[in-house]
Length: 634
Image (cartoon, rainbow, N blue to C red; front, side):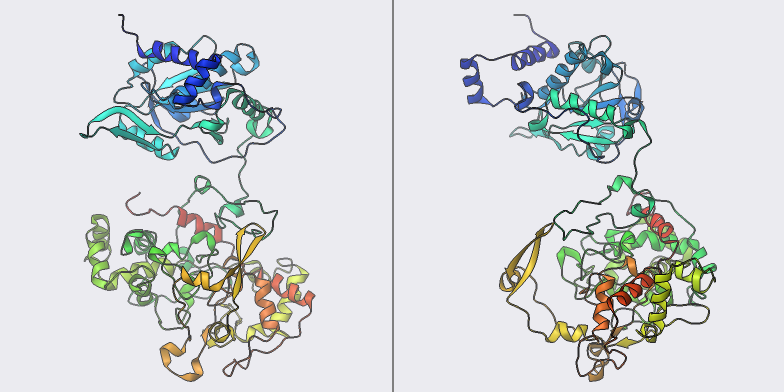
């Protein structure tokens, strides 16, 4: 009997699967495996092309490929001029609802194009093998012979090696695993997830089809919809620049039942390194000279090394947690999503992550003011069991010494390897460069630009320095403003948190606008026991210091929610309303805290003023953070 080649065998399978089945054939097939919807007629009426939208799902990644003539090409060279349908297969796959399905659907589309010539020059189909060991360019050329036809742009591709293949699979989230027999030998088959990608002419992924949703009718309609969309012929639509440098997982408005996501794909976040030394050599308007320790003068090299360590997860005990996971650049160098921080393995931290903006000017550090230098402060989170979890200083030092790149950088900067002292010095140098001012307020108040803030914010400033007396703790000096007195105060927040009796239930949000009242006993059964927090008292043991916490800076305050040491207030308006009520009465309440008698309009005015305190270089500092090397990456 004459042996059939793989393409001919597959084409017979495709014809059988795509042809109408008799009742007996259908029954037999269903007993073995139900055919995917893509083999039959569409079971619903597809919407008309152009009556719906296909959102951008991120950038289509590039990759190194070989065509059937064994020429090296890039995937991006095949994107941009046409709408593309991209599938990953391997030529010897025998799963009727796997690779053969993807090829069968594209085969049907190829046949449809004969009757829709207006689409022929606007659509390209790409089939890439994920088995380069077997699917050489020659094999893919043979495989393609049964499917290609004149006038239809359908290209079959492979890669030179597994090394070239893996980045493609990773970037397109193609889960592919080799199948081995009981003796550990590769069977020539793969376990994989079928995916077909629709990519527009701006190299943006616009849809991803799995087995249940892969059908020629819907794919053709989606292609036509893209071609009808003005966005496909214009430049790629981007989020506003301001949004790109705000929280990526933006859940603003999530409490409302009409919530729509504002989240931004990681692929949209482009880094741009900057010279951070300028933030202390020439501080922005509104800030004074940066206090730089005599024994740790800043330099580009120190800042660069400190920045690299700041974003390296290997500094934690289990190599999973970096400084930046609590101090997230695009979330105000704090964490907008959590009231209190969470460390390695989900371990609970008692307090909110404070912002690092302008931390160089802080005279004391931590919410309880227990440290007075950044070089020393660095070691608190590194050694805390519920933060980065390292058991000792030596463990951290030896781990960094074992990484050749780090060891060489320390020797180049300090003339010696990493130590407790030098590790603290470089991370502190990076943190000391995160200075942000020249806000609208600064330009109005210090720069004398009368139009820099509007009348509402100006009324808010009068309240801030007058009736509301916010400036009693958040001080504004003659030539600069740190908006803090560097002191510790009892506002009643800590007292209430420690002393008030919790209700039996609390509302738990399970979806946008949907809350359930859940028993606290149930929440407690899956939570760590809440530890008491007495604030500054834990450091001084002075009873007068119970529930006192450090006065935070108000610069960039609109970026650093939630507020207070425990993250209990989620909006600036809530903060103003809390102080308007006079805090929470207790025996150690700060005498400056008293009811303010502000009207609703005055609360709005004061909130508007606080929103003018965002520095104009925030985007630059965040973009620099995005450009930082992470771990071993360069």
